Length: 399
Image 1 (cartoon, rainbow, N blue to C red):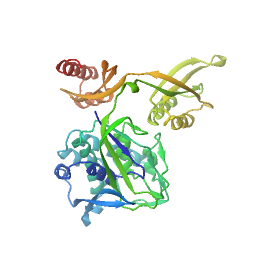
Image 2: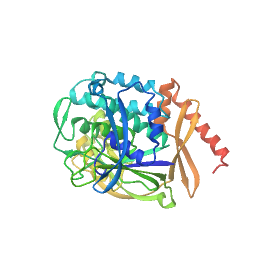
Image 3: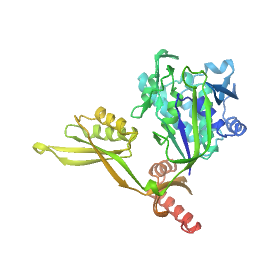
Image 4: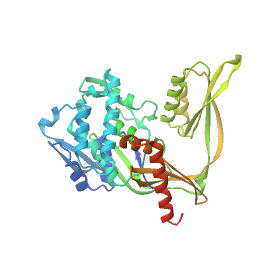
């Protein structure tokens, strides 16, 4: 299974992500052919090698003609542009989701709705090319999963369409809510709204590099040189590694008793805990002292994510304490495979023990999306995915 790890050690932006994918082997001509099908003009993509603090990288710069700088577009305008093109795989769908997430963040910051937002910088041609280009690149490279490191936030101020704003930009803070951030020691804007929106939308998790067999690496250069670090973003492309050693590990069990929180608050807290990097979360009804009904919010977190998850529990709930316990767990070595159904492509999570398949489960999010898009019943999509998996297994001899 193909895995791409985004190492945003100095920051993340749309052009840095695109440059890193090109540096890792994305065909620039194929990328340009697909992007040329979008009804936008007034730009070209310059791809060149540059050096940042002794590190060779690829700079992917979207160069605009003068009139392209002043195009202001709303969400519906961008969605129409993306729908009109011929982008590979799920690229158009993913790009629309990125812009939707960005519009929601901007709307929250400016007190409007996603449909009322005019994107200013991020609605211009360069952002459309960056976002559509990254999604196209992931499709052309055959990426099954994307995982990202925590994103550096930076410091200082940035000039935007609304004037001078603090760094990290308000939209970036909104996008990163509940997700781990980092400090790379470099001043200035490290993560742009476009870069944050792409990774928050497409990355399955934020944390350390997963067990994998690297096959290619690429560095994408940003516009600036960087003071102490090379202003680059790194992508590592390889195969997810499932080994017998991965079938057992030790994690943190975090628990908090809640007896004065509403159901809405508890539900939102559970979602925020997952977004912060928890491996799993569950809620257990309990009877507390004085006969009061309560809920235990419990979750699992690895070493890298436990502090961030704990901080979210304190922030999102009324608890005065979080219990921490180290627990060992046995688990199935897991991988994702894709199957084709009449409704579309579905990922199936396959669990193995000792190399043998023990269970396989269609991904709920994929099935729900296809059911909604196609006006079908969720159970029909799930059953179609199960049938496609069984047929695949039979064709492979049950391996």
